[in-house]
Length: 189
Image (cartoon, rainbow, N blue to C red):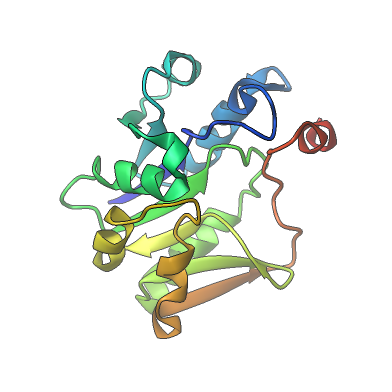
């Protein structure tokens, strides 16, 4: 089983308002992001902050599981760790994806999955025109490292810990935009 953990507990400080609920062609940004990963994995866990009923409502009909990060202000690493707690024992791999990346190209996740099956590497990361990005696929053997993450660097430390276990998948595409500021949102729409 391959499970996606979609990070949706951020505080949207740079946006100034709930960015995941902003609309794009009639759907919320979080819905676009979840739908992009949902069709490529066996299960989706969306990490939200305490009492986040709005994101839950935006996704209520998609059959996703929710995990709560009790301290989202402590950073993205804590959201990843919270999502890992919701994994099933038979999980073979975890795809860590951003809730604010609604325009992920459709061929990215299948290419990461193919590289995981072909190489057996523990970490499969996309590289967009020379820049490493997201989402990243992690084998079950590194889940304990994900579980212990803290701070705002996300899973970068897990990716960088041992280059011999990382497979990079190159895409001749620009880095998919993640929506952090009003300017990002304006570029998107």
